[in-house]
Length: 319
Image (cartoon, rainbow, N blue to C red; front, top):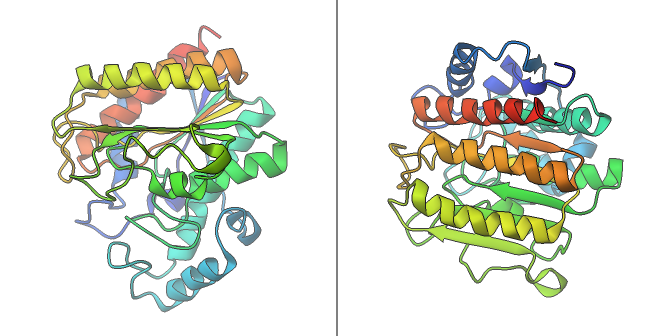
C-alpha cells in the first residue's frame, strides 16, 4: 500500500500520565498497541516516532506566563497545575511537550502528503485552556495544532470533531469567537459530568455564532442515540466544507468506563472514523489527524482506538 495510516508510538508519549493506579496512567499506550498488533494491520499501518514541541510552538496557543508556570512546577516536581485534578511531576513540561510535538508531526506528515490519516493515542488533551491546565490536560495539542496549521500551512477553515464523553472545553472556549474553527462535540451532558460545559445553546460568540455544535447526551445513551447525533454532526460538517479535520476520539464514552456514564460500543468510533474519512475525501484532500483523548477502561480504549485505525486503513484502500 502506497499511503499507509501513520500511527505514532514511543516512550516519550507513553510516559504522559499521573502514575500507576491513576485513571490517566502510563499503561494506556502499551495496552492500545498490544490490541493494535493483534488486529494484524501489517502493510496498512506505518509506525512513526515522537518529537518534542518547541516553546514557540506551544506559544501558538498557550500564554507565555502559563508556559513558564508549567516549566517551573515541572522542575519542582510537586504541586498542582490546576485546582486539584492535574498534579505536577518531575519532567511534566517535557513529556507534555512531547505529546504536542507528536501531534504536530502528524499534521506535518498529512500536509506533506506522506499519509492522509494519522493517529496519536496519547494525545487529544482537550481540557487545557490557553492559560491553564484542567482535567488531566497540561498543554492542549489540538489547540496548538489548529494554530500551527494556520501559521505554517495557511489552512484556515479547520473542523474539530470530538466524541470523548467529556466536553472539549479547552478547544471550545479557546476558539469560541473564531468563525473558522468548525467545532462539533458529542459528549455526556454537563449536568452530570465534568467539566459541566457544552450546552446545546453554546454555539459560538460574535462572528463565530453558529459555527459551534454541542450535542449533550443523556447518561446511558448508546449506539442508537449516537447514530442520531452523528447524523447532525455529518450534516454540519458537510455544510461547513472544512479544509482539515482534527478528530478527538476519547474512548471514555464506551459502556463500562469507570468515570463516565455513556454506553456506546466501539462501533460508534468505527463509524465516526469511517464517515470522517469520506467527508475529508470530499472537502479536505483526505486530511484527518485523530487523537486518542480520554478512556479509562483499558479494554475499551484498546478496542475503540484500534477500530479507528482499522477504519482509517479501510478508507485508505479505497482512496
